[in-house]
Image 1 (cartoon, rainbow, N blue to C red):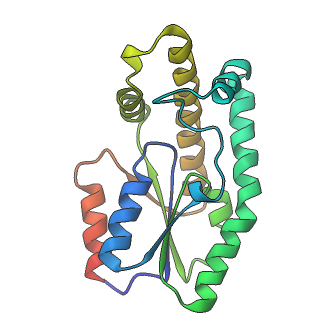
Image 2: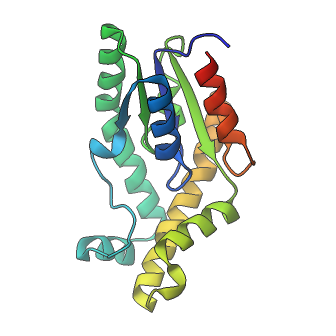
Length: 192
C-alpha cells in the first residue's frame, strides 16, 4: 500500500468507534490525534449522569429540533475544523482528525488529495445495543430512559443521513459491525 495521506479524517455518529479507530491509527502511524469534541460540545450523551440542562434539552425539544440543532452545531464548527486541516497541510504535519462534526457534505469540499476521508457506520440495531449497554438503559428510571431514547434516536438518524451523504460524496464507508473490518483498515494503513 502507498504511504497514507497527510491527514486522515474519521467521521460518523456517536458510538460508532471513531475515537477508538483514530487513537489506534494515530499511535500506529505516530500522528497527532485531534478530536472535534475538544472544539465544542453539543449536548451529548445523557449518561452516566444527566446534567439538568441536558435533561431539559432532550425532554423539551422534538426529535426534529434536536436533529436540526445538531446539524447547526456541526455547521458552526466547520470553519474551525477547516482551519485545523489547512494549518496541518501547510506545515506538512501528519494528523488524524475524528468526530461527528466531520459531516460528509463538508468533508467533500476539501481537496481529498492530501487527506483520506473515512466514514464509519453500522446498522440501527448494532448502534442501539451499543448505546443502550453503555447508558445502562435497562437500569434507568423513566425520565432518564426517555432522555436516553431521544439521544439514541438522534444518533441513529444521523447515522442514516450521513451514510447517504458519504456515499453520494464517494467517501469510503466502513461498516464497523463487520468482523475484522477495523483491524483490516488499521493493518492497511500501517503497511503503507
